[in-house]
Picture 1 (cartoon, rainbow, N blue to C red):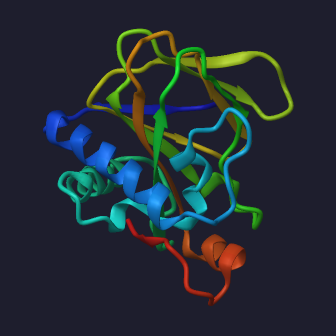
Picture 2: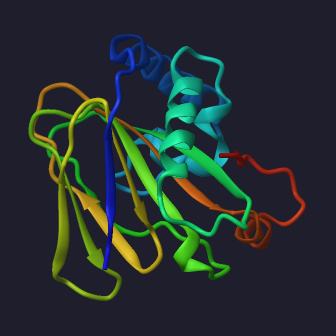
Picture 3: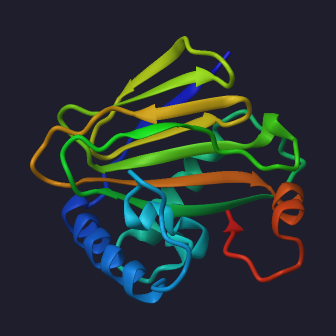
Length: 198
């Protein structure tokens, strides 16, 4: 069954939110001309395969990476493997937008050792994330999203979605995938890529 790991952090969310807005603008400028997001997806989410937020030097992102690394060490995983991480920014600017059912996993197998997670930056008060087994319709877990809450779960065979956003301000989270280097190599090979060690 799905185990969801939650940890409340003590990050400076005011500074991190400011960095997220700056990064949102930077992504749209530097990734101009790249493949655009499909309908319903925020621009930095849709362009996520073109950057890794944890390589940004804007204040706060390095601290988020450190907190994820610490939390990951406490999660059951195959410690003989080398794990790498890629992260992206989710900025949902409009009311009613929803992140539909989707999964995060490599095409190279090893599902038991792939993880997805996110940090709530500005996602209160009425946001939840629901989880289900791939190919089913029954919701198996629901997480009430909170600011400064780090959530990590196995991504193998799992799908999730985010509830409709009803607030007048943008919903902001930082999402990420953690996977073994073997699956990264299977996905991108020896080409330059945007994963970094976790």
